[in-house]
Length: 130
Image (tube, rainbow, N blue to C red; front, side):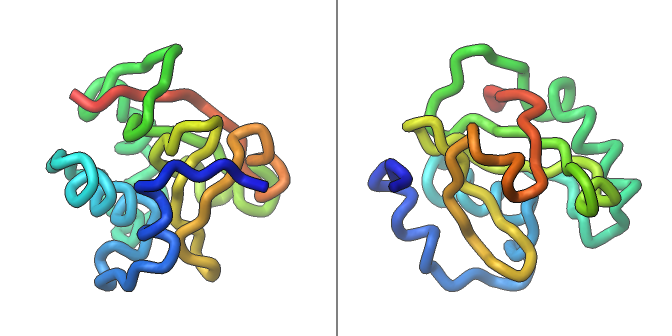
């Protein structure tokens, strides 16, 4: 069983506008609605390689790395295996050792961070928004 914080429940079933149906679009929408933050993350739909470089610069442009993540912090992940073509992936720390993120073909999901390799992802780091 995945321990979900109360605020994550609505995101697992909430209808989203098309611009929020990507990892960065979803993360931005969660940050805006739930945490009152207006963070403009790169749009992966404009080209994987272009957004990949922007996402890698996350620590300088949008956030600072943290070793003690809190709910709402960014979770940067590297894509593995067949997903490696996509480079990096972003989600929101949900507390309880979980990440809330958007997966193409699935939608909003809540995964234990320790289980990310089972879905082709690996933790790169946690980031506090600035």
